[in-house]
Image (spheres, rainbow, N blue to C red):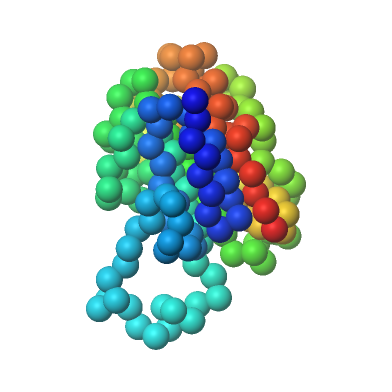
Length: 170
């Protein structure tokens, strides 16, 4: 049984036993956990910014509270059976650039799409992939890390279960 999560025009179904968090542009009253920022460290300019990127992290393990956008902090904590799916939004103006020329989120990854040399930070045994795309006028990066390159035939389908459920609205 899965759990449906949605915030800021992005939704996904989370398989049983998975942990997820929407941060950044997610509305503060959403049902999912949202990182809070201290008002004492913010200026008026922080509230007037036209764009605050949405970051979605989903993992088949307990996500640590302190994580970087591309999962630093989480990838060190996950074991060989771990799967981390990150969805990072970029400024809407980026959607029409060459980097984001792919015009939809892939619905599934192939087992050979994850490789050790595509990680933001190489950790022995792990593998991943990074795919930039635009959908509904919005620019994103899908970043997936699995805990074991040798177990990719088992782990990639777990990632695909989440990836195939992602919906992005304009």
